[in-house]
Image 1 (cartoon, rainbow, N blue to C red):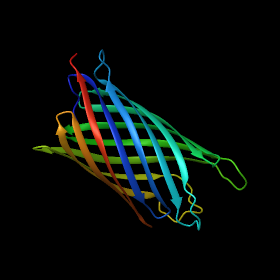
Image 2: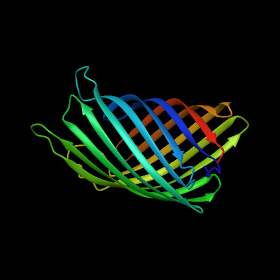
Image 3: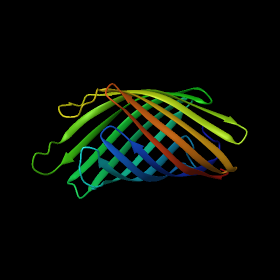
Image 4: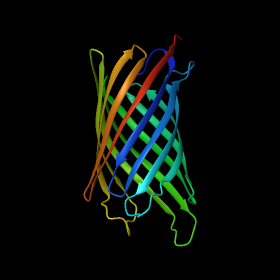
Length: 222
């Protein structure tokens, strides 16, 4: 979790499947991150995702589709990490698009333990009869820990988040408790196979997502 003295990049690809109270989902995500050669304390990243979902309340076989692009920039100063991110989401067959912006401040308590707090704003725009646009903010506080043992790498975390959205239709509470756990196996020194799980506990339901993927590191000496 620390910053390397080398400049390089990381590539990831994940496929996942989720089961929630309101919908079943499946999809995949690819992404890359890299710190700048001249400024190794600055890192930039981008991810592209495709999600396919089916609302459980529907009595048909229609699957909705979302396409997402997210970017972020981070700056590390001593043990502190500042991150700003932007995202865009577009739905297929539905007049819906979304814009996301987030700010995060974190601190490395140790070399492998990271504490963070942040806020994320979302603006969801819908078109069509009876549609209502949504604009809300989500506040989060969490901690991550990474450990290694032989050829295995473990990443575990917990996050508490709460938003200011008005829930006039959905049967859910404002607060969530999210658990993240990932186990990675070193196939080579620069290639890992990942298995991950994410669970979200709300006062009204429990959602979970299971995924598999690969992580590749590419490094150049400065």
